[in-house]
Length: 595
Image 1 (cartoon, helix red, strand yellow):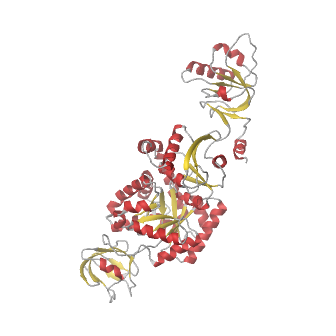
Image 2 (cartoon, rainbow, N blue to C red; image 1 turned 90 degrees about the vertical axis):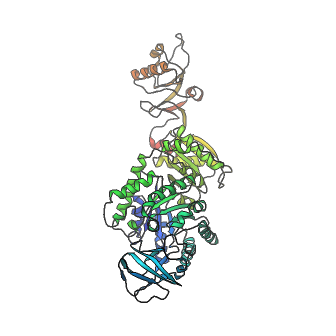
Image 3 (cartoon, helix red, strand yellow; image 1 turned 60 degrees about the vertical axis):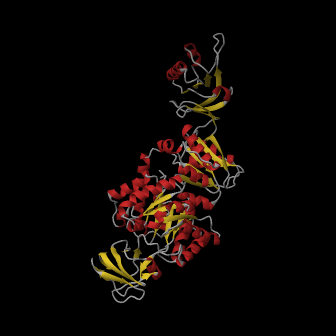
């Protein structure tokens, strides 16, 4: 069973072998994250080449996400670790003496003032600035610990003059563009301008197709969230640094608020950090961790991410399996239909694509369709439909390989790579895929979106409802085996006439007691009746029961669609009449999938 919410796995020493990558994919990985804070370009190139090789061999969509190190402040190199106790003082200097430290980059000192707190090593050590003289700071230690070289430093509420991208980020982004990643997670985003700077850099490398995910992990990112959301292609709620910069008690509320705003803006949102962290060393997660994952699903997150659990953990494959099963279990509890009708269906949109996507989901619920098919070039319509959280799967058929892999990141979307020439071929290819992967059954209804001119990005303006297979008539699903034979009609009764319905599928508009003797030998009974004609309905069901043959009632348009002596197949359990003889599931699939 597939999860609608996508799973992102960070690759590291524990999972960069081809064998482990294949196992991660089989366990449920949809997106592979490459953390540029660790490793070299040579190492990452080898990993990315392995990812591309394996996703091609497995013939599956898999997005590759490059995660930048970002502008950050770290402790300079220390001759030896410094043991700090509560109440101690610590000097920050550009030329530190023994027992003192420097910050890298040191220029941030000008933006740090008395009253600011410096949080070292993810907040394990805290010092408050009590004195500032030029470029020298004096800190009073509030929480002690052992401070080591190169540890990260968070300075909440300080407006630090850090660049949007560092030189390392520029080099890493150039590397990602050259090797061909699908997504870029931009660290420590503090303003919309930072995202635009990164997008300009991607454009310089002719890689504007790479989607930029803004990582919100500091107070300024939260403050400027609405503006960042407008220009980013998605959001990652990086709860690790966020819980250091802000009171940890605020993180759950901020997570919910950011998810809600992302849903409203049609943008994917990832929940990251410490989701199953105990599984780095333990084969089983804590109950609190499982609840955390489930609550992200209930909040409507698009994806959940594993970091150290899969990068350096002892049980990476088991962790992904636990994540996937937790996600699927939580998704079972989510009332998609209620969510749509309560929060979505009454909304109005000014653009054509959103209106068509909304209409498609509405129609799918109304017609009890089993799948949504988006014939898409850029993937935009599939992303729009995912925003509405439909219960049925979204099958996105695209000729673009970049879009194909990027859509692996999108909620509820199953990408299919097919270069189709028109809507008819697109529907056939999508139907074939759905049948082969048991997403639908022969005879099910599907709702399709496309655009004219066909194959042009941004032109979604058409919706249609279609059948999987050659369905002629639909009625009420009932009981009885699948049968085939020629059609005969009994629309009016004359006792003087001679009737021979042996081995026929008899179509009637009403049923009376006097007809029963004439129906002996029939293969099946078909009644085109109104909902109000319950007498005919109950009577023909009784006839079928006595004759031990299948029956179809409320067979809409059967009289006008079916022809005398036409060879058809009745599947009473589905309430469907098909054209021709349809024996087995394999034969059904063959009919749909034939060129």
